[in-house]
Length: 260
Image (tube, rainbow, N blue to C red; front, side, top):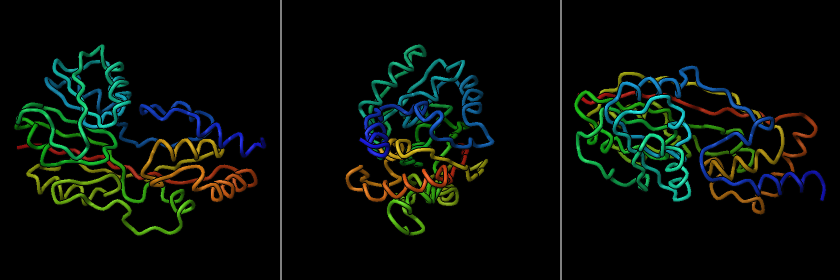
C-alpha cells in the first residue's frame, strides 16, 4: 500500500472509546482556552460537598482533580465509556450511571451543590436546575457554533450557519453557542454569572489524524466513514503533503450559572 492507504488504515484502526486524545501527539494540535477548565474543575471539586459530572466521557478530565467531594456522581450515555469511567473514577468512589443525553437525570431534586459538564452533546437546563441545591453552581465548557467548520466544509461543502439547532427552550445542543445557552439557562430559572468565548487554532498534520478525529468527534461530519469520503480524504491528503498542516478553529465557551 502507498502512504495514503497506510495512513487511512492507521486512522481507521485507532479505538475511539473514552475521551483521551493522547494518540494525536505529534499529529494534531489544538490551543487550549485561557480559562483552563481543568484547573477550575479542580478548584470547585475541592470545595464541593456533593457533585455531579454530566456526560463525563471516560471520566478522564474529572479523574485529573486532586481532591474529589465526599459525594460524587457521573453520567455517561455510551456504554463503552461507562466502563472506562468506572475504572478511571474508582479511586474516588464515584457513582457512575448510564444515562441518555436527553433523558431526565436519575437523582433527587436539590441534591448537588456543584454540577459540571465538559463538551456536553445536550444540556438539559431544566434538569440541571432541578438537581442543584439552592445556591448551587453549574460550570460547563461547551462546543460553540461553527466549531471546526473549516474541516466540516472541506468534507461536506458549505453548511448552514447553525448546523446544530437548539433542542428547545430548556435544552441546548453542542454547537448552539453562548447566547442560546444563556437564554435557555435563564429560561430554566438559573442565573448566569459568567460567560466567556474563544476560537482556538487546530492543526492536522496527516490524514490519519483527520480520520481518527472524525471517527471520534462524530458531530463534525455526521455519518462519516472512510469509504463515503474517500475522494475528499484523498484531496486533503494531497493538500497536506504539498502545503503542510490543515488549519481549522474550534469554538469553545465557558458558562457558569447559579440556582437562587
